[in-house]
Length: 270
Image 1 (spheres, rainbow, N blue to C red):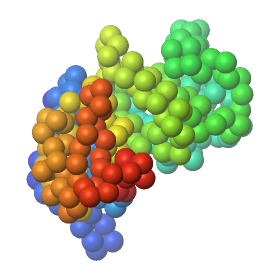
Image 2 (spheres, one colour):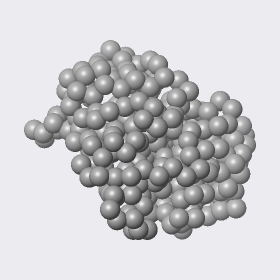
Image 3 (cartoon, rainbow, N blue to C red):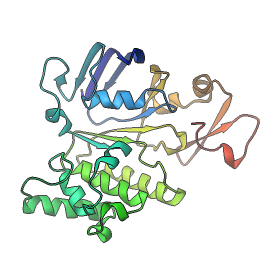
Image 4 (cartoon, rainbow, N blue to C red):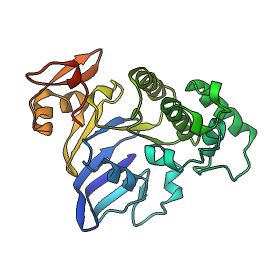
């Protein structure tokens, strides 16, 4: 079991952010965590990374039980996280190569001695993710798509058992988004791929590799299970409280509000 949440609730500033969440993820599974803005996705991710502790319930991540086992960096070195909050913490003057290398230590910036083996691995990841051409450029000068590729390479430096991608295509144009999704699919289908959680509020980003989905609504689990079942018209109509159609094209779902089929409606309502 990669993670197990049993009846987990979280209260922050006098308000319940998460309520009675049950979620089990097994090794080798690839999940989508789907919810609109404000659903509690960020709070749930903070808990998985041991930044938050549950107010009620039991949490176990990568064999470490909250309240019983050492957490903090002991846990985070086994989790590869790609998020906008991480992007804001990086030193903008570091180049792409240095950012990727820092993933070997799960640190912001480089403070420890870097081995030749680490350098070779960083170069290999930069090439695999199409980043090698701008390895020596400062991170702050990169486009959003280039930054996201560098962050994924950084997340993979520590051979994570769990890779969490939090809204990785945010701010990307269509071409950059599809290129990044292709890179993610390649990672998921490669040898020794980590268990993956893809966090999004957009139905049309859900790749076939993500065959399990948890629907999070207002801090509670609306439903979870096989992605095809979770993305049925009946279930999503109930989830959004709006009649919708789901159109599958090349095993990718696209969402349309019933009664008005136009390009503006493709994607999500978030």
